[in-house]
Length: 328
Ligand code: SIN
Image 1: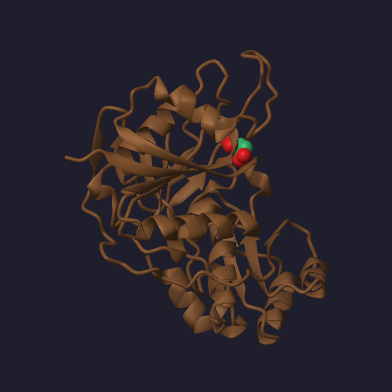
Image 2 (image 1 turned 90 degrees about the horizontal axis):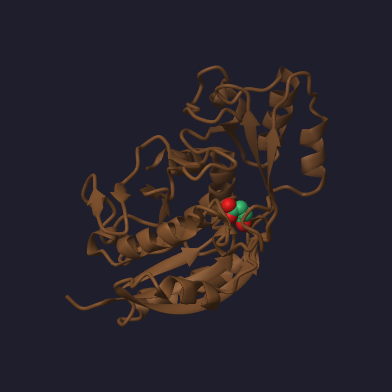
């Protein structure tokens, strides 16, 4: 078998974090250049040729449109480049689910695209980045990783972008997969897929947008009133995602204001501020009457990403938006 040739796109994050002290609590995400990171990894004797391209050196809280554009263009180029067999993106974990999902929605599936991060900076005691990266190389080198969309490799697990959620602030197994379980277990030596590729030969689900509209997440809280909804519309939001209570609920006055927004042409998606669980249509809230969309399994961050893409490509009616949230 020929050796895998993997494009490595660096963006920063804790995997490239530098504390300068093994015991210090603080560190700078993206402190380490991609080239320096790969030099450290060379000692691992990974069985792949790595082609580095630094896109950014930032904490992922600052990731946004320019980096997403650059990542998408680089991935698309690598998809068409016969010499590249897979793609790895090193990324901060805080927004890994958003970047992974955006790329998942807008790239074809014929080559592996693997996002990888770390919870501990590269120079910390027990740093997890090297192992996660070695695992990512294992995944990106595997033919069976194609046809699954973008995946996230963290904590010896491979998670589909649509299912991956950051569920802990600091521990190394910070990600969980919901509603489906992980796609595979991976170590630097072994990779065990739990099922066959389920998206073989898929084209990009959506065109990569020319820009993304302003879509806000509104978190519901007990005792709140409707003024935050009006404020969001006042600053020109083109869509609103409710991080609602329980199954996507909110005080009556807030739901009324959101229904008014929907009538005025601003799509509203109800997700939940609860860590896990579905938000289905018409359970506690009458979506049909209010003109709202239920986020189903998507949490607020990914619901916002999907809604931004849909609005950007001209999909704004409730039925089509709901269909996009319903589709696996
Ligand atoms: C970041 O998201 O850039 C910082 C946190 C992390 O990578 O775990």
